[in-house]
Length: 157
Image (cartoon, rainbow, N blue to C red; front, side, top):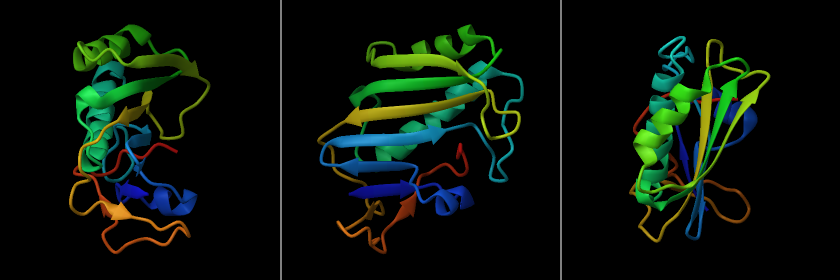
């Protein structure tokens, strides 16, 4: 398994990676538009948070060999009461022509304060894993190459 980490301390606490690849399947964990201190970017703007969160998720997928065109499923989690149209339109701008399966839903709470949106991405690709993406053995031991994506933060709990 190859993995990408963003460097967030929550990844160590919860023992997860920003993204993981086994074979041709890539799964990107819940990703939000957060700065390096975990503070939400674009407060109150669901569309801007959606664009940034997907940019970070796609960066992580790219580090594992996926392109936007390889995305087969997306999920958008919106804080309850958040106006959904801006987030959905931002998704449409980014994925028009790819048209992956999508689920968009309201949830009672997102852990990062002031975060309105969290996204997930699944992709299938035969592209090569980028240099620096970590490899893990079946026993879970990390290769020294375990690396972060090109954008910091963005962890959603």
